[in-house]
Image (cartoon, rainbow, N blue to C red; front, side):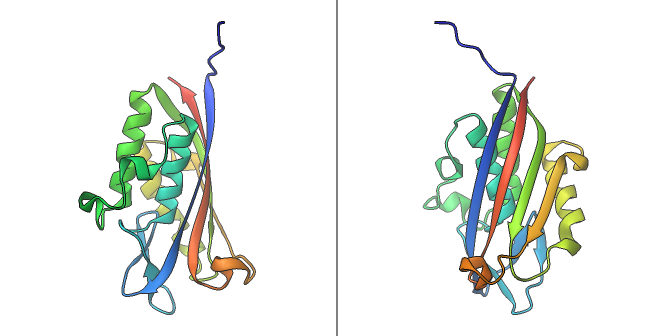
Length: 166
């Protein structure tokens, strides 16, 4: 049976990390200032935006998730810069013969306000992915005091990516 191979694929990603004292708050490669001096807890730098994008990219090609490539029990990835990890994932996607068309992301956090940092996040992500910043959507919302994000226990991100065959 001949199978039609699509010229595009869609992937979605999700990540959440706990807010804790004594660590940096890095999102999209940008260090944010939390009003209570909280940061995200994780094996790497816990950058929820970069992690969510990686899972969306890997999911679009059924290549697993970031834990497969950067396992949390591997000391090599301890405190790793997630933008570097993202660069490794985009190389893998390109090696498979695909290119990013666009990405859309939603960061869920009560505090701090994300909007002042969005332009720099878009610049960082677009530089790593080698695409125009106009093809990187980053939005932020609160959870209206509901769930772990609403109780300020953590910050999460949802991502969707459309990739096209080169």
